[in-house]
Amino acid sequence: MKIDIPYKNSTISFIHLKKRHIRNIYISIDKQRGVLLKSNLSLKKDEAKEIILKKAEWIIQKLNDIKN
Image (cartoon, rainbow, N blue to C red; front, side):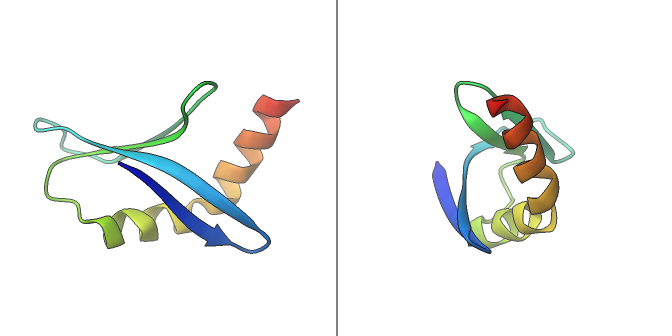
């Protein structure tokens, strides 16, 4: 599921992948797919948004690194 979040002057788009056997939450940056959030099935959409917003500065920095 692809989700967009407004952050400061930009928008962070991420894909939320829910998997059955994951115990932790993982954020990764992929050149083709962009930001990926991997979690177990119980993580709700609002909780996923909060996690992305907490790590927004890191995500934006990594996206800029990939572009350059």
